[in-house]
Amino acid sequence: MSFDATPNDASGMSASGVTVTYRNGHTALRDASFSLPKGTIAALVGVNGSGKSTLFKAIMGFVPISSGEITILGGSVRDALRANTVAYVPQAEEVDWSFPVLVEDVVMMGRYGHMGFFRIPRAEDHKAVERSLERVNMLEFRHRQIGELSGGQKKRVFLARALAQDSRVVLLDEPFTGVDVQTEDAIIALLREMREEGRVMLVSTHNLGSVPEFCDRTILIKGTVLAYGPTEDIFTRDNLEMTFGGVLRHFVMQGADLHDDEEDKRRLTVISDDERPFVIYDHHDEDEEEDEKS
Ligand SMILES: Nc1ncnc2c1ncn2[C@@H]1O[C@H](COP(=O)(O)OP(=O)(O)OP(=O)(O)O)[C@@H](O)[C@H]1O
Image (cartoon, rainbow, N blue to C red; front, top):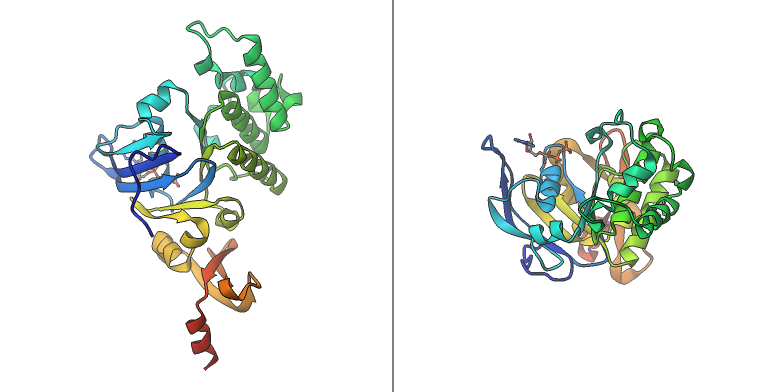
């Protein structure tokens, strides 16, 4: 666990001692600190009501921060808003799907920050929309009403909007909820490409099973940041128990090593929330192994 977030980390995104108190006096986030370098896919993991959306809102400047500081690419949230640095891929429930709008218009919204006052799209904006829809494999749906799409297709369209916005920081609110495995794989592949482009992705997810697979960093949250850092360091049984309290049951599958490497021996830990078992790494120290043998 580490709390050495540097407020002026010019490389990616960081928070230092961030507290957010809503108007009704409820403090949803207290003294939260983390630091993410450029070219990162970070998981934001916590139970319902732990403050994930609140953190997203603070990063986007939708809620005021009562104390502390968020730094995005070395600048303030206000700078990031002005420079169109942060894109947001919402949860499906946050969107009014009955609103009559075409897929390509939704993606074009990502270009607004690049347009002039009258928001008249230029050739480069149309090209960016086309390229983005192509990247999420949705170009053929460009003239469809957004409300006519399936859940997974809608998610892809909002990802395309973030791509069209060409933001360096992308916040994704539960992108895997209600999508099939193929779409989940396609989204993960796209996030990896975006990581190669040096972007910072912060992904809130309840799908813990896939976190070690594609998130190089993890932030554990429960009203504050409990732990953050490289996923293999953070995704431990103790940390997850601290994050989820008694919600999760765990059991260790003896002798099932993830790695052959003797120097870095870990065993497979399966944690179950009773509905969906998932696998995490757990450091396996040699002394413990000896104790078990004796
Ligand atoms: N506008 C608001 N005014 C007052 N309290 C709020 C407001 N929005 C959220 N909260 C409270 O802040 C806490 C954190 O909520 P938040 O929406 O950030 O959680 P979350 O981790 O995103 O949850 P979920 O996984 O259910 O989406 C909760 O206790 C919630 O009731």
